Length: 216
Image 1 (cartoon, one colour):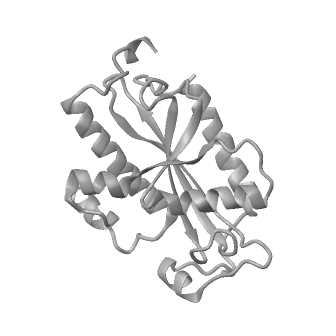
Image 2 (cartoon, one colour):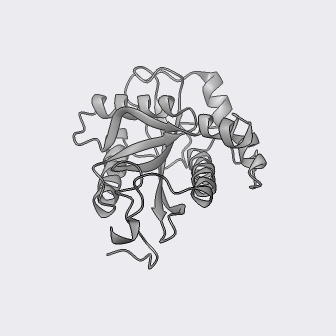
């Protein structure tokens, strides 16, 4: 059961894929050697009109794995102090296991076959998710291993912008520079962009294959 009275499964909307918006904050650009420091995943829901909206956000501060590289410049950008005494972080295997578990439940609830990662420069986030899953030997990764939905491309098409902050503002949504580079904030703003573009499209045309959504 779901608490959304207007909830409609997305099984027919994206060819059996469930879009899940993910953002990661890291200690650098190399998913094999650099630490995963924060991960957020936004669960989306679809209503009876075929419009998408944010449902809930999963967020974890992550402990750097043993021997992880952390570039001081990356830490300066994110503002993360991995050793701050008040930073409540969980081991990367526990954080990712919880995200995977919740996503798998949503995949089943939405009558989908698997999840597909949505991100702003999504390849970066997917690479860290896959590398962390492999390093921690986590099984049943719900995300497609290489396909993704990138809001950089969608933003360029819809708003003529590729930078997340500029795309958000162009869409008429609020943006707070002080909150940026938090995985939770960036994931939620990326989700807002994804939903805005999809809902604008939904208002113009009916995507092929969605004619029977009400029967799903």
